[in-house]
Length: 603
Picture 1 (cartoon, rainbow, N blue to C red):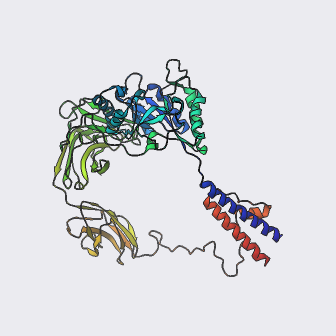
Picture 2: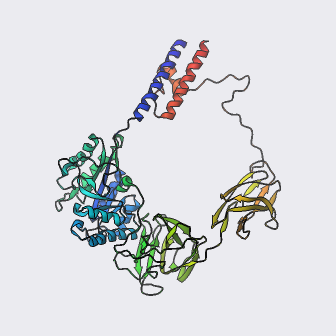
Picture 3: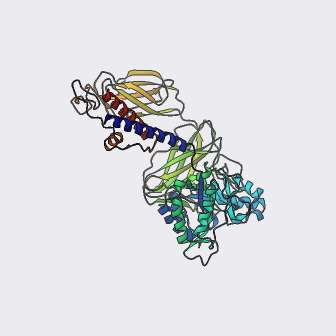
């Protein structure tokens, strides 16, 4: 019997070792990568149904929008586009009016491409890719796409059946990011078999990127040539969603290309100035529904309404923001984060004061973003919450920190904090003397209970230049202070050993070593108690015996080795099948242990 046990344990160990080896071999030879992008051109109203189809299949797509036709008859409106973006789909550009770019002079090309992207950005989207209408492009058009801020552009030819020598898939990354190749545009003559063939041909050739371009989506496709039948598209999406085990993924253009959206570029850029452009929101020349030189916040949710309003504080127009659902995306209006035509230039080291007139039914706040010298924008500071106001009210916010050394541009704006509406008008921006540094003690905040001798992490935030600080505590509600440490490096954290002095009114203070007026204290007292048990229990918990410790005189329990034990009893090799490195390592360890125990018993 023991011999059989030894043999089975050894067999199981060998099988598990071979499984580990074979798993490693498989890891060295992954399946070829095929990526499919579902691209929908023009922003047609028939594409509204695609959102539900994509949601049902769990896939994401890229929608290339003709911004000049958004909201017109036959096209999706801005709310439709926001719902797409909120669901995680990619929004790209398709020119202002579906222009055949290669036939236009360079200045008209720039107007069509840059203005189209400018509108998409002003609506809160982040377009990074352009689709050339009719596949009309050349070297000049490609350069225009790059000059307008696009990081990639897409053709409608170059793969599969568009020429005799065309490859079945685009390379990843593409050979030319401004001429991404595709199969022919889907027509009503292309059934499910053709759509599948574009994918399987690329898979068989070793992988690659297959961008499949759709236009109309209809049940019968009798009215349109560039059309896919609804049932065919739905079945194709279901088929694609099952191909991940074969190494085929469905990704948006942005997923494949990566990179952040570049700042807006104007068709006719102007010299940067420090002035706030269109601060009273009166100008709206390009007809996109957003005041010139302003943009809506990122389109994270669809339950947002925005519009110009004649209920102005001064002049003719104000702007109305409405947030329908507090759980959805925030409603906000910001200075257009562009190349300097709209976003004012700033002076590093200076301070900033922002003001706005508002009415609202919900709290809101001012906010600021900064452009670095590398041309990228980042969120910077957020002002205090402003209360609702029935009448026009002016809010002023002095930023608590000087402009950083790498600041080259500034965008300010206003955002709603909850469901409700707000009217905003007459923004102002003024450079001021840089504010002094500021310290904010984040913890302890007050109300806590600590035990004498306990180690407590003190946390703080810094605004401005504070190189080192002093820490002190008070046992009597700030009546007197006891030094804890001096010239502490400003890392934002410090470990404090609670003193052996119980107190019901203890507080902490941090202060700049160089300028003691830059300081902050706990918002409220906290307690120091002279007990060793956890606060509120009043008793010492019983000592627990570790479950794996064998006490003297005890008989060790029978080992439970999971699958190995079961395999010995049944005469099989349970648990030999590995599902991953961790479980396999445990299985090997268990096998070695079983073998050693069996030999010990034989001896």
